[in-house]
Structure formats: structure tokens, C-alpha cells
Image (cartoon, rainbow, N blue to C red):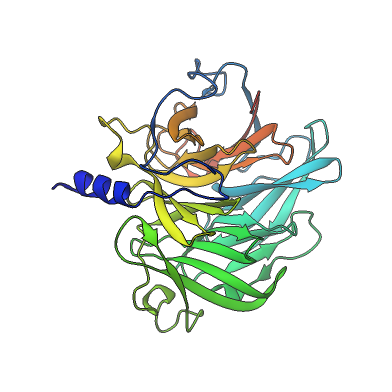
Length: 384
């Protein structure tokens, strides 16, 4: 049997209903397949080179090395992971900078009508800040994508320096997703033999101390899992991923998103979207490009991920054909937008405004293919 046949048999044998998840009531009998989306086909490219479904429009919010419109703040290079936060009658979009030594993160504050109120730095002089995650108490966790990297807790409202959270472990950090039901934070690791972790704070809402655990399971793509404590979260001299026998390996952990009992995370090395069912403590594949029936996978180069109020997952491509692709609750994979003329870039930082009416993302290297050419966008339209 070839790899595709083996994987398909494994997935079919491990089907499970995700009680309490985004896709509650849907049996994950096989990974999602291509089909028509809820918004229809993509239209022609607009003036910014963005193809969107009918009724949606785009605008540019910021460009690297240029002042954010209406402010004197210069937007950072290589915009990466991002999230939105409520701020009075408006909201804030935060964005990491995946630059060595001087990375950090910035924020744009919006008024209630969507106009820019201000822009500012919330984290400075950290190393290759790639992805991260929002907390229920309104902070942004910014991870360093370097060997023995840290997580920094930052404050989107500004006026307070970011804080290193060493207890969350030192490894090649990517994304984080908070699970307020179990009071844990899930963490991905961008290594070809990386692991999937969770951090249990001693006190929920205080990340200064706690227990780092790693997911333990066999080599199958579905089935029950367990968690084991990482003896030395500092990762030296033995990397965290090598400290626990039986820790499950994931090929290049990327984006991470939690909602309603399920943590969704992506692995770029094998173009997969995984679903960790926290209620029943098991994993399954939500998407695998090698299992698309008939070939022609619509989603490759899987990277950052976020979710909408309707339960749709939005997965950004690093490469591929520069699309953000929807995976709907009924397991349909379909393009939501495409960026033209930026094939040397990647899409990063997808996030919805708190009211779900605006959608933010970045092209990390823009049209130039350089980290100094990053562009951050906003999309508006009839989101369901």
C-alpha cells in the first residue's frame, strides 16, 4: 500500500464525533475535501491584487518601513502572527515581527468606525517572533521561532513592557491557543520532529509558573492520547521534545486555534490540519493534502490558522498559490481569498475583529519578496 492508501485507511479507522467542538455533530470520518464555499467563487483581483468573493472588499492598513496612516509610527518588517482585542468602542490588531534580534510586536488601534486611532510598539528586541496567541484576559503571547526560544506575554493596550514567561518552556515556539475550560495553553513547535505541548499555569491568568506537558501517542494519525510532564522546560542540555519517551512527533508545527472543546493546529511539513479533541483526549486529521480525492489539493503550505463565529476555519498558506483557505464545519475546503503577484511571500496573522465583521492578515514580504516589503490588510464583507 502506498502512503496515501495507508493514511486513508488509518483515518477511516479512527473516525470520531467531536462532542462539544466547533464541528459538533459532525463525524470526522475522513479529512476535509474540496467543494463549493459559502461565499461563492473568487472574483477578479482588485487594485491591491486581492481576489475575493462577491461582496467583499480589501484595504491596506500598514506597510513595513512606512508610517501607519494617520500616525507617526513606522510599521515593522516581516509581519507574522496576529490577533484582535477589544479596546473601548474600537479594537486593536497586534502583529509579530519575524526578524532576528530586533523582532518583537506592534499594534494598530482602530476607532469604532474602523479608522486608525494610533499605532505603537508592544514588544522590542526579541528574536524572530513568529506566531502566538491571545489570552482570555486580553494579552498577546508572542513566541520566538528560534532554538531555545521563549514566549513573551505582551499588552496590546500599550504602556507596559512585555514579560518573558520562561515557565512555558524554551523551544522553537510557534503558536499558542488558550483553553479556558481546562485552564491550559496549547503550544506548537516548528521543528520537523517537533511536539505538541500544553502549559498548565499554577494560577489561571498568571503565567509566571506552572507545568509544561507534552502530548504522548503512537505514530497513527488518529486515536487516544495522553500527556506527560516535561522534566526540564528550560530545554538544556536536552531539548524539551527529547525528554519524554513516546512523545508524538509533528512535522513542523505552525498555527493553533482553540474553540468549543477542540484545538486545531497545523503542520507545514506534511500539509495537515489536526484536531485535538480536548473533551475525549484524542487526535484526528481535519485535513491532509495527500488525501484529497483525485488530487489537486486546494490548500498547501499550511501555516497560521484562525476561526470565525460560524465555525469556519481560515488557514493561511506559506507558499502554495498565496491563498487563505476555508475549512467549513461540514468538512469542505475552499479558497476564501488569493493574493496575486506576491509568490515570494507568505500569508500570516489571520484574525477577526471582535465583532467578526473585519478580517486582518499580512503578506510577510509583499511584492518585493523582502522582509522590508510586508503589507498588512483588512477585508470587509458579509461574513457569516
